[in-house]
Length: 225
Figure 1: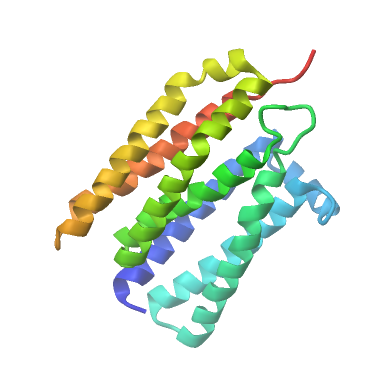
Figure 2: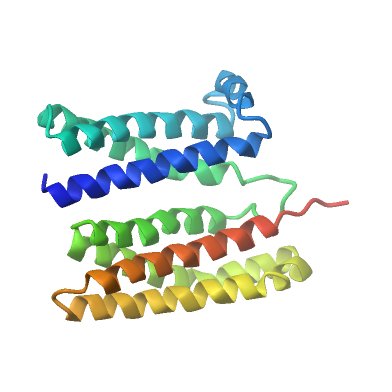
């Protein structure tokens, strides 16, 4: 594996590890995550915890080995195994939010949007770290799919809770504008041979867009009285 890709893979796994640590605070006290292991296979959150730990361990060890140029065949196998676990993990995460008590979350759009997020941001990061053509293609296609799904998603949210959805207008608008800017960035990157700065800015923009969308999503938390 080229040095740049190895560095990129290791950097991304470090970011994921940081995300896992931050994510443990969803349960109030991080140590409660250990109790959730008792419900693996039955609880969506338990499944998420186990899959995230497996992905982090496999991907982290594989990426570190490739970075250090040690046991490359084994590390490649670990990375590919991590990729398989990652696909299952991506599907498992949205299942946590399919709550009967939260109408704005319980829809197929939640699953679709959460799967598109790593494709949008991950594609841009992959392009930045060396997988340029495929990364940009995945990112821009995911953005276009996101735009196609947006009208139906907004209609579903409005029918579930119009007032709460309207309150997130600024966040959803910011997401759409930033994603559109990301598409422009991809076009510029495709035309320029040396565009590392533009590529980095594009990655930052699309990740910021998805963060804005995720803030809006969590603000849609509502319980019937």
